[in-house]
Image (cartoon, rainbow, N blue to C red; front, side, top):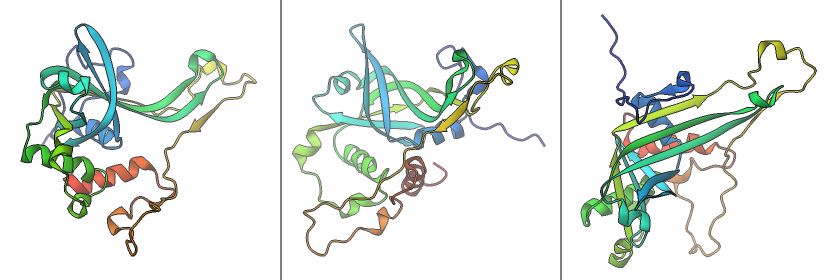
Length: 241
């Protein structure tokens, strides 16, 4: 029996890797895993012929991406009715110093996701989306929070985009010199780059007797942020999401 191919996003001229296609992947598992290891994304779009790129928090639920911002945001005012958008994330994993300037590089993981952005409607759908924005980082946290006031909800907009196409690209090679350069008396190395959590700092104005909830146990000093984010996503949306 032939093994089933993993589910993948369609590939065309929009998302096909044009250079170093050996580093590219289009399957859902790879794309989603790289998205889930990030909290911050950049959304690109065009308004009246002028390109813009905006950083913002985002989260994923299945093949759908969400991001938020102020209701007065130029980005959200123009990404609400099916306009084309591109959402990207990138992780810098190593600095790579080779024996030739041309071969200096970095190890990285990245994703580009393409689709059409639409505004989440008011009401329960929007409240649920905003709850997921918090729970995606801190599983179950919204259940113990003060409910948002209507004016707070009105001041915040949420946009979603179904992923129509996507591509991941990964370099994980370290030093990669030309074969004839390895004997040269030139120092080379790779330098790992990690985003690591620091020591949590409780708010100095906590009410007496308020303890740190067990739901934040994953956020401990010394842990890698990408590992914590993947764990939090799985706890909120399910391991198979």
